[in-house]
Length: 476
Image (cartoon, rainbow, N blue to C red; front, side, top):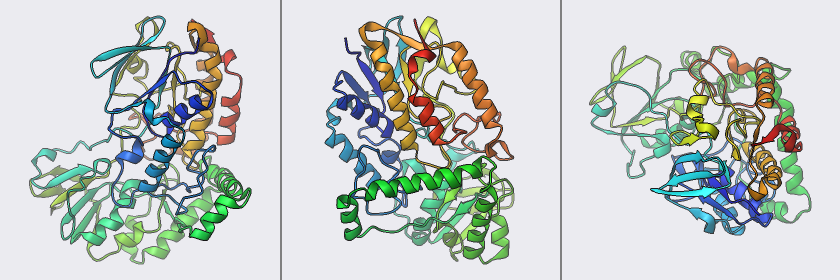
């Protein structure tokens, strides 16, 4: 008997899982999506300038290479359009229940009972595809409710607000801020960027693909595949070693410092924007418009500590910065995997309690005590150097290899000793990476444990997830 599969989330991960099931002839699945449309983070993040720092032809499914990309680096509308295209081409949209949020998932000893919109339904297999960057993190600053103007998180952009001629405060200076600041700076009368910690920034060699290039990608045999492979190999060979404290670490540092020197001539501002931690400890910003925006006469970078938000604006230790609009570009609650969903496994095991010290899963995909439950883009599977879509496809392939062992009501979970060995292996690998050195980032829990990133190459991850899965699991 084919198992009945529940997929939670209709972003890159959930759609990939559904498409693979469809292609395998398995149609006993349902996708639960809490929002009114598909796309996940690329539906939510529609702020001005939103886009991806991975090239288009690699930030896409291997089975749907899509020759119609118009830019080397895709922007949000085009990425969302690609996902819409995939959902329609592979006919999975019909299986999505929109505006249906799963609040509880409980294993009853034989099946998973999912509660959504007040209704409970049973499934044999549960695939969590909610991602790591889906819940906005607002800062803990006193007085935020006192502000008389308009305020919102970058991932919940208020498109009804015209920022032309406004005084805008952007709190945060990471990847989202780097993308939205240039277009906002062109509109606003005054823009103040509140920076807690500067980021390493390297150039983004963006370009448009004209009609001739797009035709070549579509019709010249092997061209798109070769281009995709080149991007992938370059990232593995050059960017990954920098994160592993290898030969390219100094190369990355020099590239970033040269980029800063070339784009910011004011030595005082340049010093303000120079990090004091190793490149890659926080996510490296890839952008060529960020620094020029910060040098505009109507833009200031503020490093004074924020004390509170007042009715008129942002109060720091030095003064009050009046504003009409506050944008919180403060990232996501990235280490709180699956929250606020309540997940209860075998013998009443509570996943939130189990993960109180930091989320963990074998291959980032499965956890002991939670039979027939799998995660996509789970703990320790994020990348700082390559395409997460590649990782998601590896994870989906692993789950597809598990499915034949789950027919006729069988239940598998990761062996505890396998999880223990995996934890030790991760800890050993993590000790070699740059992420633990002297910085705060969304990769880590409050006590400094790196729960988000994968410390190896993607080629290693592909080999590990491609192994026959049965030896790592036990029947319960």
